[in-house]
Image 1: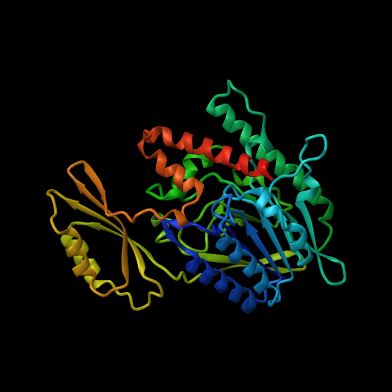
Image 2: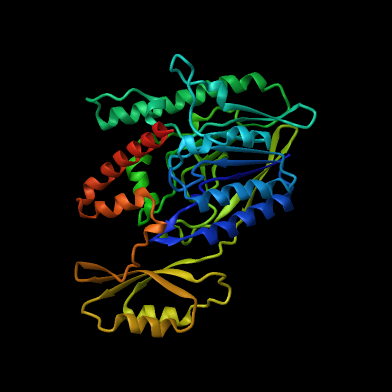
Length: 412
């Protein structure tokens, strides 16, 4: 049996106000081709399917087209869990129909009539054509505050963090106890998660992933001991760089299948393929995703950058490279645009972000004009938040995200 692990598609993402629909379509088609070539049996998508809780029509079209194409492969089952960017109600809305296609969706933790979490709903049994269970997937979605603890007005940050970690560990303990009942079967038993584990390799340089970790990820960093040995593999989402947790190869982030910020420009983009024999995980293979567009950052003096631009080889670029240019200078540069355009010539390079650093003065120049067609509510909020002090932005953005998620759920 072969299982493919992917996560963090972020369909509908706009990158510095640029639409990425074409890139996403190419990458999703590449994943379909991998599924065909490798004869994948089960697909696991570990959260952040969409970039926003109110995905555009175009991004939803990509999502449903992918499932339509999956029907023409050997893959018989798919499991999708919600991430922190996803609206549970949006993901869950079509799940009865998708279940008819053997695509099971867990948008959020569900509750019993008494208000307690219904852990049984997260334990999925994937059956073959004869009705026999092929695999057990403990489909744990992103766990929100209300799933983990009761908020207390007087809580300190440390107390809140302890409560979140305790809540996450308890959730996986409860799920593991249910899964343990099936340990005697010679079938894969896996878990999913959309969370921030301790000790990860994250570039703290730029990009929304880093800002996002500051507002929500640094609270509740769990260790590998959170995941019981009953889980032969734990398919994680939320971190965009592929890596293992606690040096355990069975606990992994697949990362995002395409770079979502300039800080991800050097990351390998992959999906993970798990090979099972009689319920035992024999091998884990990384399959590279050939991203259709490069993200590049050039930093240095104007002369150095112009030379780099002149020497850049774009022969293998399918789509124009998107560039961030940071010029270090001691003086004002005149005719900067024309000098950069001359260096670029006819090469497929598009400058999305241009920054000059001049004696402690940083200026961002010629940013692309905002096109409201490609902005989601969170993008608009970030634009309006520009005048707020940087040390207050993280908490303000977290509050907005929580309120926006609640609003999306309640309006259903």
